[in-house]
Picture 1 (cartoon, one colour):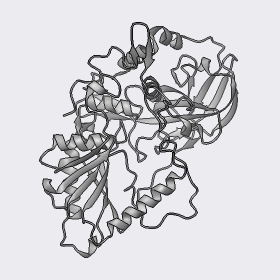
Picture 2 (cartoon, one colour; picture 1 turned 135 degrees about the vertical axis):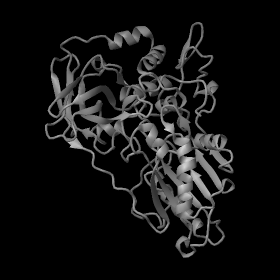
Picture 3 (cartoon, one colour; picture 1 turned 90 degrees about the horizontal axis):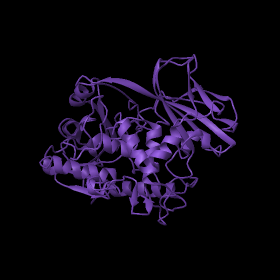
Picture 4 (tube, helix red, strand yellow; picture 1 turned 180 degrees about the horizontal axis):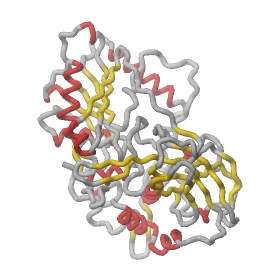
Length: 458
């Protein structure tokens, strides 16, 4: 969806009168924030999204407390184009926010505040259009951690929306580069330039693969292996594999999602158990691969061709997979390639198998993302008049966006979409709904996704 379409959808859920009230100009006396790029900043002028985040608790940093839940940190976002070192932008009332809609509605109180500038690059697409998007730089489209993004040192403030004045924030910090993972006896790393994607994006685009090789791989250069591709979100390295027992001194980190008190220990236990199976005498020998196909819209491409992301399906299937098999002695035949994944990876496994039936011999898909627009989360986009709520002649109930293990609802679909709109317009949030729209939608006249289409990507 383009910006206007997204605002219409948001308005449909919130109510036109309420949206108009939220976006109305606030009194001149309202307190606001001035965010400044220091004169020492490099690589200016800068395009991107400036975020101002207020947190009710000081730890962790405010940027790490942003989430779609009702108890997430407060965030506001504005676009900047060509912001030079030493220049500033202002975030005040009238700027859409989350969870609270407007700065003038934030309760007076003591907060920790932080600003972030998520950098955008200019892409001159192969079709002649020019767009500004956040280039993937090694953090899986995580605006909190992408190298080169600027952020301010968190500071304590006493905020009062009714008090005149400006709070100054300086983007005095920068995220460092991310060091690529090193090869190990079992995990190897492969990177290649995609000619197909480079042509689409108008610049060099690379695909990276993390390859788990069988035991004694180097001792038997004559052996060739089937290929198992694990599809899913951005992998910094091959996950779930550990050659040493769990750390006995590990400090437990609970999982709210799974209601487990020491989930990080469980992860280490399972990763080590997998390694023990992997090296077993009776365990089948094959190559397992995780792919980094992060892109300007999301942490992965959904592994299919689409109007806005380009021919990722062809690039992965016809360029990357054969190159991996050549480098790591794959069998190089469709009957010897399999796909698996869950959630986003479940959708990708199904999508790739369906669209490339002769290139793969099976897909193991668990709990896939929506595969039918009649059940797009909880919305039938063909029949429902409202994307965000069940509506009767007298009543209205908002669509839930998530349920926890007790079926409690921490946020609604409207809340999830609004947070993405705050983090980036024109589908530039790096969020789940924005990538669905980018993958499923045609490209608009301005080069950005134009709105949800009615057919699956090619």
